[in-house]
Image 1: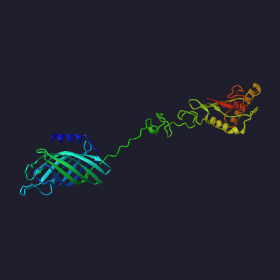
Image 2: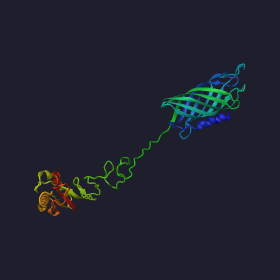
Image 3: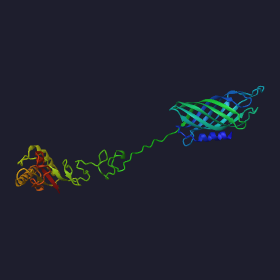
Image 4: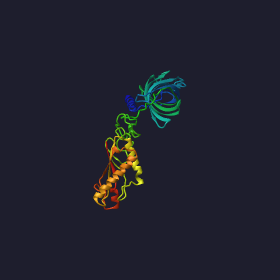
Length: 357
């Protein structure tokens, strides 16, 4: 018998505990007992009682149950000429619940207790018992649940058996005040105002101004961030140094053959370059003009010088100081495309600006 009880306790101890919203639970119960081995007692009689549950939060079990059951009417001793007795049982159990849904759960119990007879006789004596059982619990609302279970009682002295069946109304009380959930603040390792999960540019410099992706701003898209850019408002597609200042700008001015006249279609490009120079007064520019290979080299040299000067004149007309500009003509010396095609020759008839400080 002791081995059976020990095995039951060990099995129950392997169950994991679940938290409860309440500290306690009180359950009035009513049911009956079916005697399997008690000598000379009615085989079936009614019981009623009360159980108090202590809900566990840091235990292997969900609840510790203390309670009692007592016969509703006296139980007759069979063939005893009217002798009868009442039976009271006190018990302590460990309970584990197994949820089936949000409202329904099964539960198992194991424990021990003591049974007391108002009138002992015919082998029915006060003594200890072990018990185990199972039941079902249905949560009707937050304020009460219905329970039903079966419990097998084994008397320790004689091994007598009783099967108890109970239904109860479980009422929780002592609500646990739960602490507000801790909301973890998203990490921003480089303190740039953009959390790590959205930061495409980690390790931003202290104090750097960044965009929504955590990358430092590069307002003129020249490849140098604003924090390091000493020459803001760089023209599109210009080559820049590591301070963001332009080194070479293709002014994209194309001239007709044998002509040094700037056509109206290039005004916007020249105006943009003039504005950049006026916004960055520390810069100087050498205007380099080139030709294709048609004609004599000396003629092309002179023509390129005229084209460079025409560009300088256009810039000074736009209020760029002449002292910051220099015109150089290279003629046909530095082609960037083949002079064997009309398209290539057009590419070679170009003007670029080399920027210096």
